[in-house]
Length: 361
Ligand SMILES: *Cc1c(COP(=O)(O)O)cnc(C)c1O
Image (cartoon, rainbow, N blue to C red; front, side):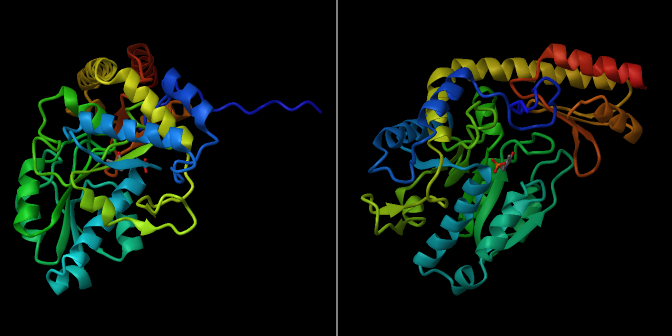
């Protein structure tokens, strides 16, 4: 019997994913480097050099001239590592016993669910606080929740559900007043925000660590997340000795890891930063505004897009009918339709989507 090689899904009806079609240069680099292991940099030196390049480029994007960090398996690993670094630094500083015995991470309730995994794995308390009516971290609530046990405050720069940017400079000030670190989760938003007026990066605020993922808006192949730190000591706090490798220590959470993700990130950052990413942002933002206006004019309640992500309240039966028509769409926790205008989402696709809405209502 003749076998047909399975094909992945097409991207043309994918409207809810934070991943996208990799850029051709990312695909090509991934193919060349898939059999390398940046977890063993003394053996796989070429890919190790590419990783350093990719981290430097991420530093450029995030306003950090001398960045420390690495290409992680994704935003989840980078977020877990940010919590782990804060916990270890608190231990090493021999500060208040409460910071070591019962460490607390304070974050807005809009924070990504990867922080629940971090709290579980690292046995720290995740204390989430309400957001304001614009879906941003409520500073009063954060201030009230932060205490002497707090090791880390998290701000999100591009929330998963509504694309909102928390007030990062103010969150940094609150964190540092309490001897805690400030982590910015820009896993999705980090490749859009340089082209906005938002205050989100290492230059704008006293940010200690950041998650910024090449495998989302950066158009690298999966797996390519990014962890950045302002200080060398943060990476040192993550490092363990590596007896059987030529390199002497390892700060990553995974051991053997994909050279494909690393090489693809280096290649696509070289290719697209800054002009290609600026074009992506401008066209995706215009598309999001177009979609928001189209939904609004049809009488649906729309959450104004701040980044290229549109949420709107539509009836359940319409949502189900659109899914049945093969649109890959998803809902926010409170039930709104959520459309992520990733690089593969074109105006033509959105016109076809709105035309289907008109047919189905
Ligand atoms: C996607 C996302 C994550 C998780 O990243 P993965 O690469 O899926 O592990 C974390 N934070 C935010 C804000 C995200 O959008």
